[in-house]
Length: 178
Image 1 (cartoon, rainbow, N blue to C red):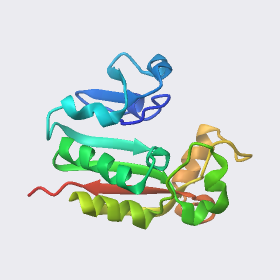
Image 2: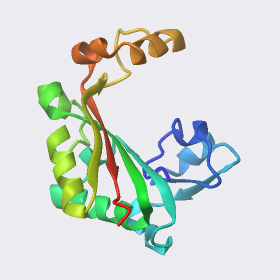
Image 3: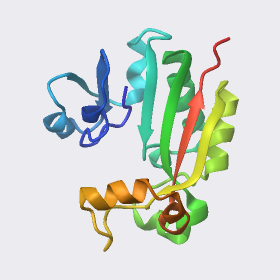
Image 4: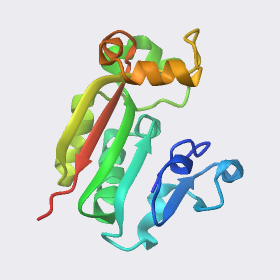
């Protein structure tokens, strides 16, 4: 499940028996492949989905748009409840520690978060931190850096580059197997 699918870049490229994409922008449905069930709604309304139904929930660049840290925790609790034991919440998140003032260059960014605050919110919900990369991807694709797939592949294969260009964190939170 992708809780803020945007242009469906993630959900379209994974293999799964069932793929669900939420987004409040109905136009995002235009990008979903036929095997993706698109839901035009906020993920806060995912309460109708069975508890413990999903193996993976992906949250990319969404938590900074929420109104408060309390809402971030509420969102993570919803994700936690929908995951099977051993399920994972994958979080790709701008890290204000590395973006500095540029974090606020997007008018809809409301809640400042770091890798540590995201992990702490996850722990409050019952998750354990399985992997934390404080610096992973560049802050935005709106840059002078080349976007060609070969350059992206090379970047992902070169972790030292992450320390220079990485402004977003990648965090894997896991629901304990109980």
